[in-house]
Length: 230
Ligand code: 0O2
Image (cartoon, rainbow, N blue to C red; front, side, top):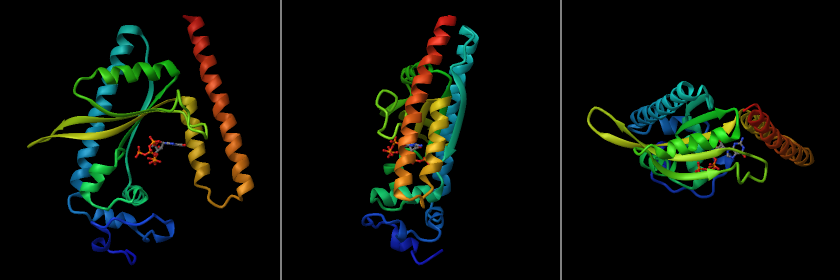
């Protein structure tokens, strides 16, 4: 570990986050928090619980309407390094309580659909589950981000039954089409290329925005074709 110790970081509200202030191994700071493993296990269980619910819905729809709105489901736990970076960016302390209170996306599920209307069908089905508490909704499909990003985000709280207690855990669900997912994965890759000269970065940002608009149009046309087929 480099020169920032756990004692220095825990319980301290940092100033504006600067990447240069990042310790060499921020993941060590996060992983050394007492109880971190248990907390991550709980998030993992919440992810499993939510994934199972989605798989059940998909199986039922396959059976009753010969239709499978979900193409794939992926899940991930946020890496300790990303936990550190996000808390620092938010100006929050690095502690177990801070992770639980300030991060909604430690447990993340991504649902990929073929068609845009499938996304809204899944959203409705999630809203109907009465043990799920919807905390936040961001519809970046109706309201795309200025860079062209499209996806439907929901933060839910889901009860998980452990041996001695029931805990409500937060899970972030992102729902998007195959095409939106392809765009987002490429955009993220490019964003991490930090050494681009500004003119080139601007040009690429414009190209990406134009691709996002083309993809949205294509998603609409594919849906129209499917509707024509009946
Ligand atoms: P990672 O590594 O994918 O997890 P919040 O989580 O609500 O506190 P924020 O940023 O306001 O923070 O939430 P928002 O807008 O719902 O975005 C959260 C996640 O959506 C991001 O997580 C990305 O996965 C994805 N996302 C949002 N905007 C973009 C975008 O412009 N391009 C791409 N490719 N993905 C986006 P993280 O933590 O940034 O990263």
